Length: 357
Image 1 (tube, rainbow, N blue to C red):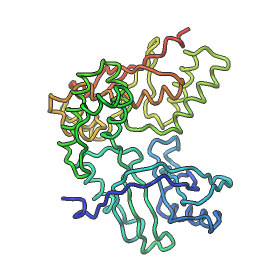
Image 2 (cartoon, one colour):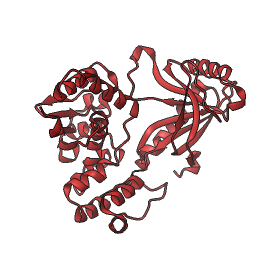
Image 3 (cartoon, rainbow, N blue to C red):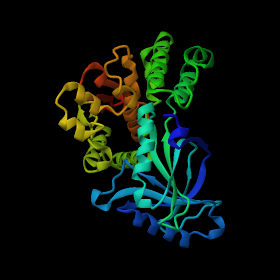
Image 4 (cartoon, rainbow, N blue to C red):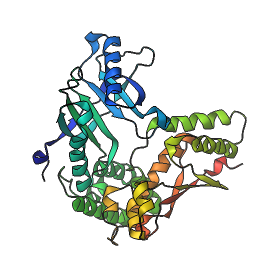
C-alpha cells in the first residue's frame, strides 16, 4: 500500500520554539489537563499553533508515574515560568497521519502508521510526536500523529564528506532513495555504500562514518552521565569516577542495562528490542530477530552479504553516550552481533588511555 492510500503524508518541518512541560502521563485525560494548564499559563498572544505531545521513551521516570511526555505549545518568544520551559524543537522529517475522534481511541490510527514504517524499514529518533489540533474538544479531536524519520542515508552522506572529503564521497554515496522506497532497497543502498567506503577508508575512518549515523541517544540522560562523572572527579580518579557513572546507571531505568567495567574496558550488552518475543523464542533465529533494534537488519538476518561493518552504526549509540560523558573520543569494538549469528549484540567501550591512572 502506498502512503497516500494509507492516509500518510511526508513532511519537512522547520525548527520550532516551544514552551513545554515534561511530566508523567497515565491517560489521555492527563494530557488534556496539562494542555489546559499550559493554555491558561502561557500568554495567548505568543501561542503560535496547536498543542503537541512528545513521548519520551528513554526516561528516568518511575514506571508507576506513567509514560513520560513533553507537552507544550509553539510560541513566538521565550516563556519560562515554574516547570514550563522554552526550547527549540529541531528540524524534523516526518511521516504523518491524521486521527479524527476521541483522543483515547487513536490506537488504530497509530497502528496504521507504525505498520507502514515497519514494512518500509524506517528508522526513527523520537518515534512519535502528536499535534492536538482540537484539544478543547475531547470528543472530536483532530490529532496529527508524526513518526520522526532518522535519515540514515543523509547522515551517511554528510559524514562520508566530513571524513573522506566531498570528491570521494560523491563516488561512494548511491543515488538518494525516494521516501516510499522498499525495505529491500534501503538494505541494498546501505550494503553498496558500506562496500564502497571499505574501498576508500581504513577501519577507523569507516567506524567514524557509520557510528556517526547511529540512532540519536537523547542529550538529557547523557548530560546526567556527564554531571555525575564531573562531580565524582572533584574527589576521585578517572576510573573511580567512571564507576560512579556506572553505579548511577544501574539505579536509573533510562539505560536499561548498565555496562560492566573490566579493567579499562566497559562491556555493554544491549537488551532485546522485543523482550517478550526474545523470552518466548524457541530458536536462535527467533531470538536474533527479537534482539535486533534495526528494522532493516532484523528483517534480513538470513542475508549473508551484509557487511559486518554495518554494526558500527549500533556501536555509535554507545559512542555518543561516553564521548558526551568524558568529553573526548572513545573507541567502541563490536564483540557480538546478530549479524554474526550471536543472540545478543555486545560492545566494548575502551576507556581513553589518558584516563587510566
